[in-house]
Length: 307
Image (cartoon, rainbow, N blue to C red; front, side, top):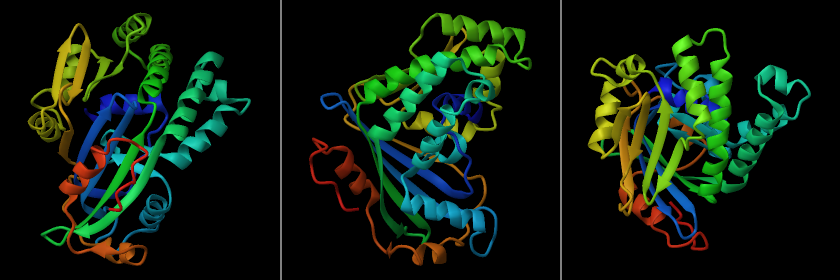
């Protein structure tokens, strides 16, 4: 849930990237189809703007906008959790094959091989499609994306050993405390499945000390607003035996929808002109209806919605 926890998860998946474009809030609607082992996610970004300038977008933000519109790139609550960037995954695969990869990344050959398997699975089975850009009732710029993840259980099965590799690597770092070193090694030795999916419930387990849990998830957490929003959407966060468990959705849910605040800065209408030059902006669009239409498709062979 918080930057500290999910940044670790993102590194384990080798898909973290900080962005410049921002948005006021995001709604993520998903449905897991066990028969086809397919997870469909509808991303709705509300109040899209650039955080660098008041008038227009900076060169870095323009570059990011172009990469989103032309490539397969999607954000999971901005950089608060992580980002899927297809081009970056390709670059990372190339980096893993370099002779100095083991020393630079401080990963054993077996761990490098597991990382490459996971990255290739993500490249082969994740598809990101840009949908409509539109203005909401307040005239704020919004946009949607459709994400399809095939072979979900195979990806999860590949990710869990890599997370254990990550914990082992963290344990031997000089800056890691003795308490965390013991915790990480104990967790990795348990062969625990850190990511799990059951019906429409996604679960994440992570080793964490009590004091760190209280700091990240307690009443004084800097992310308390998002934590409370997550819980109002049916999310659950628990702590037991030096481990946090985050649950999204319920196994019996037909679909799950999570809406969280993202930016701590106020919306500025500085991205409209740049987006208008690159794609059309609709005046009316029903994102909730489009989300239901996409995630409830009975089969990937069905014609994809055009919005």
